[in-house]
Image (cartoon, rainbow, N blue to C red; front, side, top):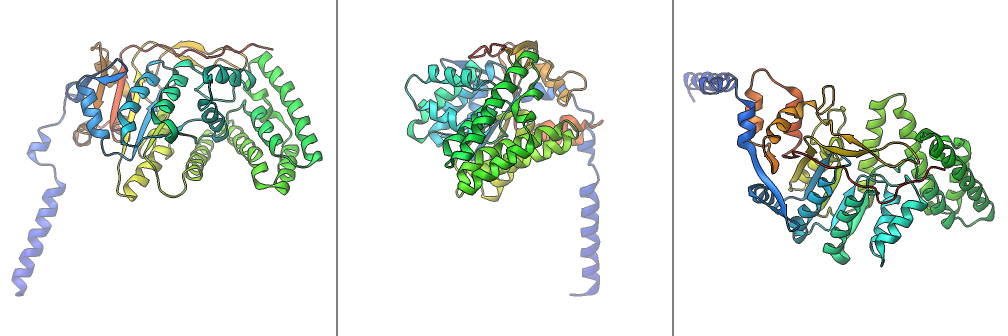
Length: 425
């Protein structure tokens, strides 16, 4: 090839690269763009009619979920409308093989929930479980949340599986000790566990009087004794030691959070990934994940961590599949919030996008949703290239738009109701 021809081709390639990096007049003309108008264009109505998703948003969401391997529902906890939506969404997904649910609870607590869901008179049995083990189960001690699990179990039948991937809750000490006690073989180890169970009851009574979760057994029991009992159980069998392993792992995350919240979040995210991997060795099934919004993000969330949402997005791409990520929040109204040990949940105003909140960048979506009576489903995917070209850039809004594929906003939400009202000691 003559040298001049090679030189011309190199120059042409350099010019093409230069022009590809420079903004075209057509792109520049799109700045600034009207965010509110763009959100209106990305919005569609969504409703529930007779337990089914309805409205233009239902078709859009169903199409997006049609070939997904994982569907992640990232929520603001304590809203009655979210489990109702999750129930209707599972009805869409289940025929495609979504029989496995992964929820933001501890694995050992979730195994108890799954067992109870398969029993007759399950609602009464579940209420008895909550009374026996108060504050051992996060979120699913709410009536609407249990109804979601019941519906999913009924729809999937014998194929139903429930996985908890989070740390065990602060109040799970009694449950974990009893699980270990049932597996203990030696009389000396059993006696040590009985003594710990007595100490747990005393710690719960103190925490219920004060309302302070830091007084619970999981946080206050002497570490050396917990580790000693754990080692004694491990000498008997690996299975017998696992409840104490879970207790110690959860305690470590809670303790670290009091001094280094960022590192604690990283450790918790790592535990979530490991718990999910342990529960699902081998081939990944179709999976519906329901967890807090920060856990369901693709990429780095507002707390600076990469969590279960990013993990599953990567797994899906690695295996030739796709994940679908939904953010679900209320624009206004009320939600149930933790109010202390021995206290029922408090009913508090929704402040998901209050100034200073990690989700404050949601405010434009909430403003648009407030103009409409039906639920607002925003398809965030078309907004991504436009946000990247907008001036000024909003990094936190971009994080949401790239972290989720859809955002569902209820214009006014209601607080979920507790199944059992705890009684202070």
